Length: 489
Figure 1 (cartoon, rainbow, N blue to C red):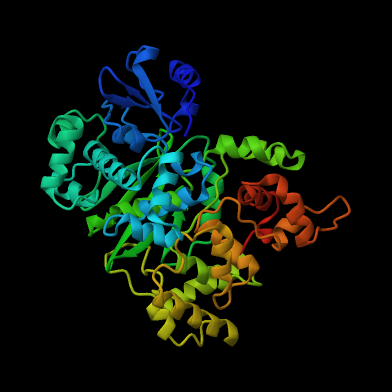
Figure 2 (figure 1 turned 180 degrees about the vertical axis):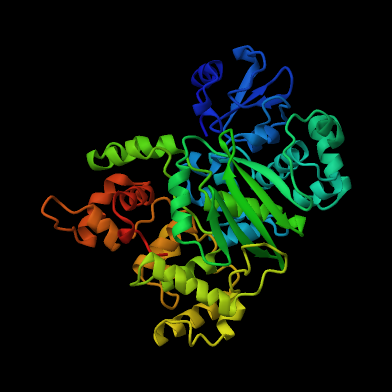
């Protein structure tokens, strides 16, 4: 990625937070790399080099600054490059694709050769896939050292290191000091209950938290999710374990997350899923700048700065929700999901006064008798077939080779039509350009003064001007109308 030296130097001199996460500064005289907002003394322009990602800086031999803490910068890597393939690869890496597999396996999942994937990473991120994965582990470990009281052994496991020895060696080589020295210098100490981890997940402001909470509240499945007093809570099931988490705004530009989960090795996966659910990798300024060029959207963008695309915790869960929501209201679909969970979902193994169940696993739903749940017989058959397909293929709802390939794969599933495929791509695959043009809410929001709604084909023509943010345009249009025109899933 080409970074103009003079422009980047002016950006760090201004210490403007708008550039935070967009570039990192390596200081050649100290061997340290920093965020643009670092409070340290400004280095001379001849002593700095600029990198598009923290991974690129570390691969070049620079170590993270202990003052500005690059691990707390908003993670905008997936939005910075022009390659959708790199964005999907980053999503897979964040979900642990390189924890136990090699780069060639990651490339195969994306439909590429290994050498081609490496070239794309160096072109758009300035670092190799392995360096990106390693940097994520190191920065997560550093965040856990600063923000939790976990023992070093548990931090090593939670960050994805295979052993405490490897963890210590990596930190000694990178920071020129043992991990324990970083803990003695920490400045943030969130209070956590026994068995609980508290973390801050940063984002680039602004962030429309009320809109996100309204979306989640309307779709909260009884026993699985709840929204109370500005806090979102849900049950989770990963690697055979059950747990709970809660999310609420922090005082800074971050969300405070409380995680109760017995298996620490699942923490990177949990964080990755939360980042997707709450759309923390978005660059709201870039989205608003493009969408505001449309006169109709300009007013909506101005009224809701920082509106995000709500994601999904799990692909199978979202697909089931989408099928349950076909041709019914949000409330009806949510009630159906609650009855389905009560009948087929496993009871939560840890105590919680409100949350009682985890969402049904695909295997359980495939074998269950869905009579009595309250849905048409054909829809129950569709859910059973979908569950069987999901149980047979664990990567069924993971990032695909392209948006079109992903849509084709989704449309081939039982009960998944054009609208549902685009909706899943939008909320789960994090495709910002997915656009369910047949959605009645979008067509109603785009109706003219006489109330005439555009056809899906006409809406697609209009939406060409919103690329590559058609998904965000859809979210703005959904907020324009009443609850009855919002998507049901």
